[in-house]
Image (cartoon, rainbow, N blue to C red; front, side):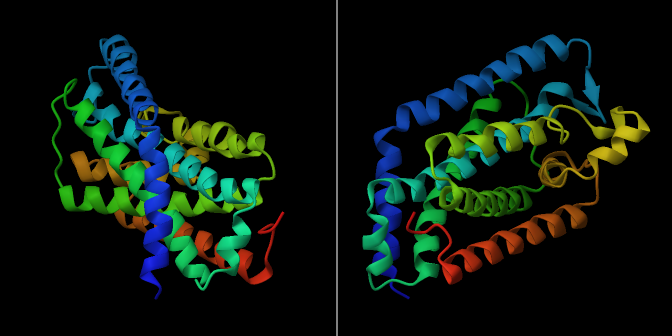
Amino acid sequence: MNLTAVWAIYQYEMARWFRTLFQGVVSPVVSTSLYFVVFGAAIGSRITEVEGVSYGAFLVPGVIMLNLLTQSVSNAAFGIYFPKFVGTIYEILSAPISYFEIVLGYVGAAATKSTILGLIILGTASFFVDLHIAHPVAMIAFLLLTAVTFSLLGFIIGIWADSFEKLQIVPLLVITPLVFLGGSFYSISMLPEFWQKVTLFNPVLYLISGFRWSFYEISDVSVSISLAMISLFLVICMSVVWWIFRTGYRLKS
């Protein structure tokens, strides 16, 4: 493996992120604070507990996942789209580096950014609620697995997109609604039976449920099912990336 090439891509992407670090970190931290002020204080005064956990604490895994998914997709999508936009993708494709190493560099950097952001949001949340992480190793595992999986999805979107507008379509019109409808701010047991069954078709539900279990040992679905769904989505994304490089789909356009 050409680790020098992987490190060069990774380092370049991280340097690009650090140049806009202030806006990349401050915005999520402010929005997280607002979630706890609006949802935790206003709604939390009416909903004191959810399954034995204070409503403010119950929000934490959902808020982290909301930011983790959107940031993973956006970072990876922009990371690979810019070389296409400015034409440097040809230099990357002609360099003595395999497709796996290209993906490793870009996806690794995007996953690192979103993971750091997730941990920053976790730290911010600790100022508003008393946090208890029952399974810290499982929490980190779910965090990393989700970051890598959705960074791969973002990489696919960056290859597919042929304009800046398309880069925003999936994060804004697909990911965010799915997160809000996936039990981020409520337990699906609070929904009518019909909508509980409908929500089970939302893949984000399984990510949030497994992640929340690592905090409070409560979940809407089995932890093993959550892990299986994340793994399945990871395999699907890896297969699509493999197909893209095998066929050359939109790599040069």
